Image (tube, helix red, strand yellow):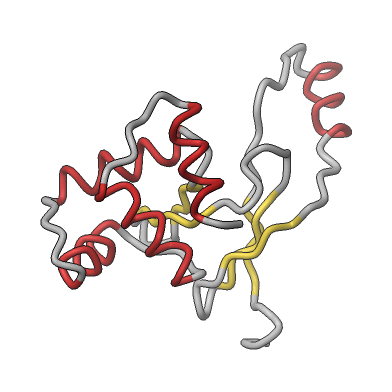
Length: 140
């Protein structure tokens, strides 16, 4: 997906296209893996874009809320973020636990779980997120 598609999503969510937001999206497009806020801050600094850590966290949260990024919590309880290539459709993400690469899984068989929740727990599923972890083809 091109940066223009992500910039269009920003507009749909009434978020201005600022140099910082655009640079963060560009970093994720270039890297192709999940990144933490400290890494993003360092990469912005290399591009001569000044941003404090609170600003970086705010931008990452805004991009996640718009569906551009997904939040990944690792075993060390640290938060990382990854670009979502298909924010407009239900799908899942496969995360390589060795190299940090994130790939889209364009398959969702969640309907059985939703039926189970409704039947046995008397609840209603409104939204779901699924992260699958393992080793990618290169690290395997």
